[in-house]
Length: 202
Image (tube, one colour):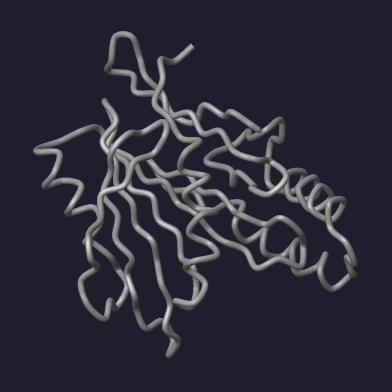
């Protein structure tokens, strides 16, 4: 399990940070900035990450390795302010999941804000999602919705979960693919979310 402090709230006394504990044998932390994990830039990080994933994979081919190298090179410089990104990729032949954590300082009424975070989407949703209360080990009570949308002619499902953990509001999204994937992949997302907490910065 890797525990990675990812962002600090400087206005607080004492300051607080988002801590993400995750299984580094199945998840990859995409660079939120450089340097990252001892790498000054994308080239060495991509090479090291490809090596790690291929080492834990069975039946790796040159085509697999080229695909992974291209994908990581594309993602390495996808950096947005106030956002963390993680890639679930147990092996080079696995289907991958991209999980995004967007965060901001708490603002307004908790229930209204969480509802707005879950319902707001850029996807062409077929209907508004049903809202459900959830609980995570580190973040406490939150709100969740499953957004079903038409993406390039394919029905896909995105899970959107929102939490307030002082001093942050967090929106966590992950596209799961076709609706039939939800029972298999939603527990993977929940397990990851259970590793997120807000703690005092050291």
